[in-house]
Image (cartoon, rainbow, N blue to C red; front, side, top):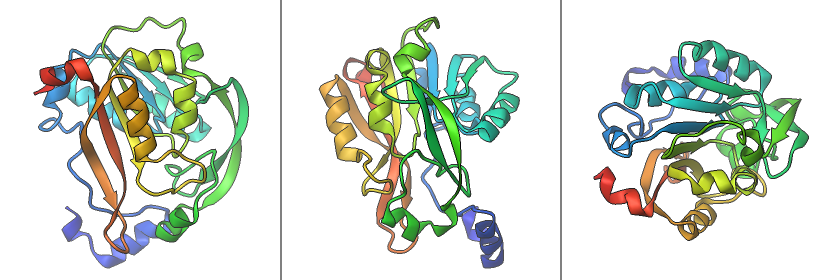
Length: 245
């Protein structure tokens, strides 16, 4: 697909804040995500839903599951609601953190790179088209508090895409994370946001909580040198790993 995209088209997309990059087959592709269906997932928690892209994909693999979605940016949240209106989705227009309150989020030109954290120099060098162009005040909740009155079915799948804010989200959701069967967490190998946890930090934390790292999906490489920059890391509760094979 990428091979037939011409340089002028790539340049045009760049002007609108989009970058065309080759990635691995998505985890939730119907032919590569069959293992997920073996784990009898009852509830999906999508942290950093954007416009509902992951929800649409995972619903193709394990349709009809209850999905709890969190998206703090108003414009993205409104599209999320529209895009998932026919699915079993409970959507919250807030971000997640270790404390309840409000904060300012930096809005990226392409929206997907928006973060509470300042952008690191590496991010600016690799993806100048994703620079911050605005800010927005958002609500923050602890995950454990936000869903305390929500009925969760066993074997939870948690997807986390929070642009460097993983450690704060984890700190506010430790009880919920304990109940997870699968964790899919966007993880950076070098700092692309200031103060973020890197893959090795996430690895050590989740392993200490009884999860097993089983690999990466959708790895993104530097368009300048080809070295991996970030990827979605997959962790499965250790006593469930055999069931996925």
